[in-house]
Image 1 (tube, each protein chain N blue to C red):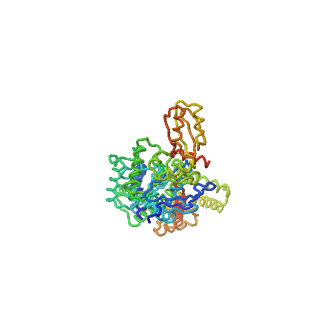
Image 2: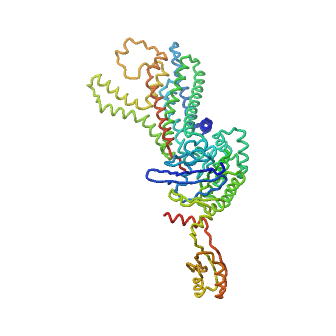
Image 3: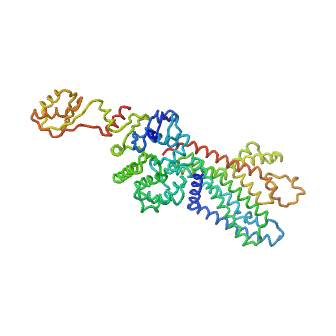
Length: 312
Length: 313
């Protein structure tokens, strides 16, 4: 059981008419992981999620959650999996508590137990004062937090969140991210989260996968993906004053330098390995002052755009 | 099946507390009470003249004063509206508001949702009709002072049964449209359109078709005239509204002996006594089974459509 993936998709494909929404997707998410599922709109993220929940039949391949086949035993999968859909909806004419009670009933949780659980969860997501208010009066951020509480009613092992912070103000989304991290750390819940907000994903996810046109084009930790992009090259940025043509020439002559580019303030040096010390020496020799030196690493945003453009 | 039970109770409490339900209940209740009051007045007048009349109590529901149609007609007219009001946004509203995907991601079978919704709707209809019948009976009893006999009670219960099935047909149709159309306004209009068609246009269409196929002029023989009428009636019977009207009028009026045209020689020597319940039932057996079948077929179509529907946010 130690190495069995909690979410395990094997050659998963979904075809709608001519459109291949998901194309032979392979994905394993381990227990306790926070997995970031990225991709442009219409890449097939939601379709994949729906297949994982057994809400859509895969055209080909299999998906398993906690060892249960998602299309054959959807009830067992859904008992263990909490799903927060994109634009989650609640019955506006019911209160937050009533909405959650309905979820508890659908899960067959006894009334008394559910009532205690709901109070606890509403406290967890910071909505205890509005428990008996109608959801129609809730703001988007409140609904989203209520959604997370609602997902937890059934004590899930896995939680799948589809765009949990979409359209929410920075403070609200920070609170939601905080919540998600707590779920993983304190409750050991495996989390799969799809989002467009890459810096958020980078902050909280252990591993990411980038889905473009139904194909998983990249899968791994952010560091791993960055290394792959570098392909053995290192990029160093420096800022010097004054920038003389003589300096540029001497930098170009350093062994290992492939390319030197000058923009307004910065000089970007592409080289075969980390040659920062050589660069510092060269700058000192030419009587310029080194103001700044930075080894460039890739942000998830850069990684994402690179992969996205490659496929296009 | 905890899922089905949860959906059923949720939907039922939604219906019972909804404004739509209260408004419809108020409209039909008021109309029914007024019709009963008027009917009772005329029954009292008749009773004074012929005190040996039978099935007096049933007349509370069937007698009309010319100004107001009887209670049964009100139910027949407003019934489809009840079904429509309870069902037209059953599915598409939940899809649009994003509650459907949340509910379906809970551990329940997908059909629990539509079964629960349909059953809750039918239960609401049954509760509504039974309470209306009881209210009207109470008023009728008070006004005419003649208690119902056993057969009258049976006939009234049959009337409720048929009406519930008939209104469930409209409920099923409304739910079907709420699956087919994404917008609630469209599904409501589509259902209303069909209701108007069956209630008003069917009559004109059947007359037009029958007259075109078998023209009737002054000199036509009775046989031709009869086949014209039969054709007209046959076309009318495509409409569940006609089937319901025929079934109900036979069940609540024991004096109805035939639903089609009657020749004079057939009535010759006939003693105009009311039919026993079994014979009334015999007369409308085809209508009854057809209404039940139509309701089941409509629900089955809605069920299949719902099970095959893609759940997308």
